View 1 (cartoon, one colour):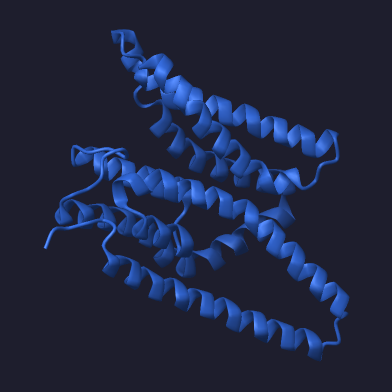
View 2: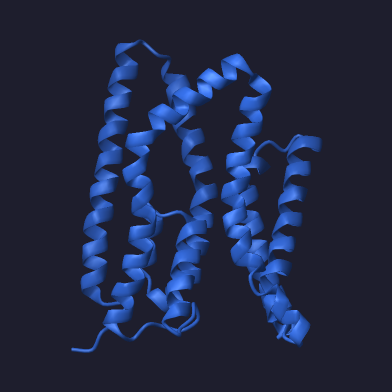
Length: 244
């Protein structure tokens, strides 16, 4: 039997897992509504809260859909659907999968035809993100306690420390973007493609931020990420043609 990244059995397995996650969501939603009724909360407020949450869920869902599409060419639909629906992060999954495929001599545009390569990519994506699952319950409470304690004693340093951690995380992904820039000195400008795409996305994100703040378009805040992602992907087509 030939291996396929879009094998029906993969969709069945993924469907079962996602169905279990959806069942949990429904369970806690029902419990929350029952508790709200016990507390005597206004039903109009509850309906408004649920409708607002449903509408603003579309924003990250669009970003997730973009990630599934970008990974589906090499990994099929089932695996990206599972990872980006349950536990995966869009920024992490694309980098992890891309790095694993590159080491295997493949790319995001090449569909995996070997089950061993497919399993290798799965392990790389899983082990990398599993570290966070293990460390979160062990360290989060201590880190939060330390942040709260620092904030009470010195609010300025607490903000600096928090911003430094965020910038450190961003720097890890920036390294992936700029790693091939030096190829331009040898006449190969393909290393500038991710830099240009990032620049376009950053500009679009800034425009969305200005629209939200200056034009009072508050809804733009929730849709800035998917808009910048789609804009970056659209810009990648002419930029790749130009620099390749």
